[in-house]
Length: 95
Image (cartoon, rainbow, N blue to C red; front, side, top):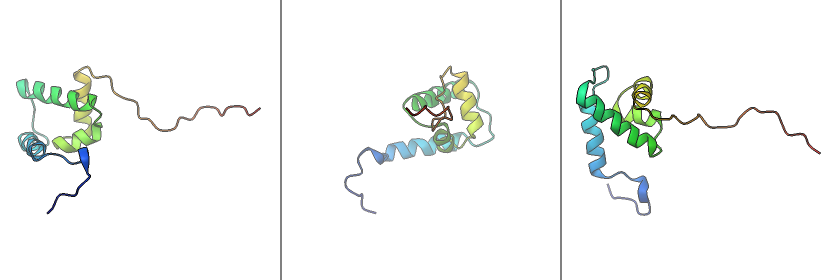
């Protein structure tokens, strides 16, 4: 399949896909992650989250649950972002 021009940074490199596949393969859902592997995973998740990736995107990428990724980030000392969206404050009085 030919690569579409003008996609810019939206396309992931082949190496990135291979890395994701390797991580997902070694971290089967439900398997325990301990020791150095847990530390490395926590550091990788923290780096990606701080770069703007969502918890849901990280969970899908690693093949783990949302709760697992959330817990790993919390254990790593990451300040989690708010949910965003509209807030339900009082409407401003019109003058």
